Image (cartoon, rainbow, N blue to C red; front, side, top):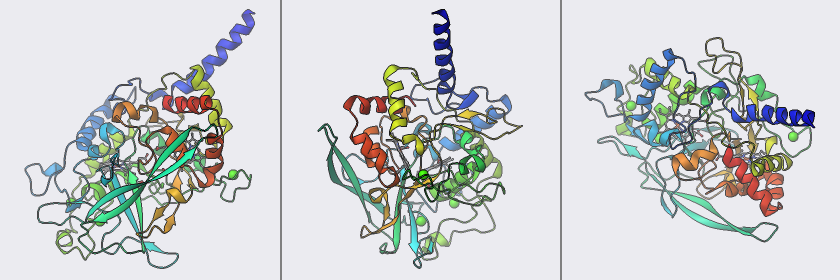
Length: 450
Ligand code: HEC
Ligand code: HEC
Ligand SMILES: [Ca+2]
Ligand SMILES: [Ca+2]
Ligand SMILES: [Ca+2]
């Protein structure tokens, strides 16, 4: 009897150790509305100062040039928001969509791809890579995005009804002509930023292990890497940041955000997003000069790199354990891979060889037509999305006071997020619909504990 208890004790302990520490050694233990804003436990003193300075550049507004604060000017000519924190609210997620039809919120941005031929896409000739709804003094903004919703009704196998709200986007006050039907529109909401330094520390090789491009094992799930060359790490090729894994390093993701979202140029992104047809904006391009000091970009990158992943709150709760079983049973983990080990990094013990639990494979999957990017006429262009990490999602409700999920925030809670899954995830979604109410709810309890 004693022997039996001992084994039980050890196995519970072993599973607790890993489940408790999704972000490795640096996992944090604050579950308040500031849960996403802490440096990893054990962040060295030398980095704490950079973390704090980086934090102020993340949070405080950028201003127009010329100004009395040259370290933080250069806003625009066109932009989405005046600070990183305006979208990544408390380092968490933006709501993106309003509850009723109307103007979309700041934290939702729109990327454009313009079809030049059947196989080649470029930035939009008049609007560039992204819609900026704001302009500085005397510079016209590009336009505004509005949303309306179409109801999609359905039923679980046990008869319980659900109602999804499908967003339809419309652009108004467009200052440089209509978006024609060659333009693919990709809505993206600001995700929460916990653990991005750990994601930056996963080797390409670890991600490539899960690639199954042609679905060789016939489980209906393929998954391919988004190959993107990095300018800062020449051996890095696998994209992993953003909803479509379009950036392969944290520093490049951050530099692109400065450039596209705030209008701040840097050595990595030296040109303002002002296509030639935007005369006033274009005339402000100063090619000989970049606005962001390299040191500031590095500090903001240090800030994001050390943002801690909060611990699980109750990983051994009975309902949560059942939910975890259901998660495996209905194949959620075929894309939302629980575990990775980060690569060796002699300089940063907190990022080095850490066993982490992001619940993602960082690969692109066909997610079905309902989630696809479309043009003005609703014709589909791209339907692949990166599996997003699930860690920290259970605290979005506490930090951001909403539980909107998916790439544009269309899901109002976890249940809806699963119901929006299609394409390669259709089997999992159908199995979810067929679960008993208790298993469905336990699965959600598990997700809320991540
Ligand atoms: C207008 C809103 C907005 C602003 C301002 C903004 N972001 Fe983002 N951020 C986003 C969106 C949307 C994404 C997803 C991008 C995509 O899918 O391409 C994102 C993604 C990211 C990611 C990748 C997260 C992941 O896990 O994939 C990082 C890191 C990031 N932003 C950092 C920053 C920093 C640093 C700043 C300030 C320089 C900033 N962001 C400003 C909206 C914003
Ligand atoms: C084929 C791969 C795949 C499978 C299987 C899959 N997912 Fe996903 N999941 C994704 C992708 C890709 C997205 C992002 C789609 C989007 O935003 O449009 C996503 C998004 C999510 C989100 C929202 C994340 C966020 O940051 O907003 C949750 C929650 C989620 N999945 C849970 C589940 C659960 C639970 C299951 C099992 C029922 C499951 N997923 C099965 C690929 C998958
Ligand atoms: Ca600028
Ligand atoms: Ca633009
Ligand atoms: Ca497969």
